[in-house]
Amino acid sequence: MPAIDKSRVLIIATDGFEQDELFKPREALLDAGARVTLASPKTDPIQGMEGDIEKAATITPDLTLDAVNPDAYDALVIPGGTINSDKMRVQPDAQRIAKAFFAAGKTVAAICHRPWLLAGAGLVAGRTMTSYESIRTDLRNAGANVVDEQVSIDGKLVTSRKPDDIPAFIDALIRSIEAD
Image 1 (cartoon, rainbow, N blue to C red):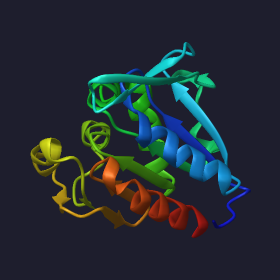
Image 2 (cartoon, one colour; image 1 turned 45 degrees about the vertical axis):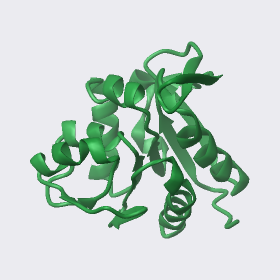
Image 3 (cartoon, rainbow, N blue to C red; image 1 turned 90 degrees about the vertical axis):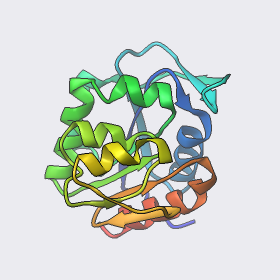
Image 4 (cartoon, rainbow, N blue to C red; image 1 turned 180 degrees about the vertical axis):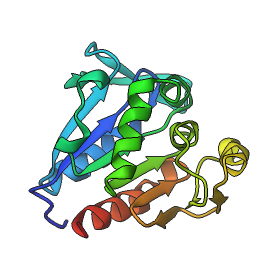
């Protein structure tokens, strides 16, 4: 695993996140030496899910979204899960964070339903990206060029479709951080 030990990575999520889409990238980033911070609307433990049906593990956020200073981080990871994604796409602080990372040209990695946040923040027009099948129309309507691939890389934007794509997502995420 490549060393990214000077990198600071922010993950944003809330209740209903897809278990593997948060924990597996987080573990890979920590194993590679990154310093990882989890932010959520509140600092109470958030509930993971497996396939939006079964409750899975919880995790306690390190800070709240409103306390996030995007300048303090090198990359942003936004894991999916239908419930998590639907709740977060309308959070003004989540949109503020995503916009700041895009404006600074930093790595932004979104998997599954989480490109909804990017569409809602007005960040997908002209971008090539992928996502879970059910939100592709939303991305197209927001001006994105949508592809059906394990991972799509458009500059510093990394997107993937679903939990099966996590290995490709992690690889592209780490390569993007290393390129900085």
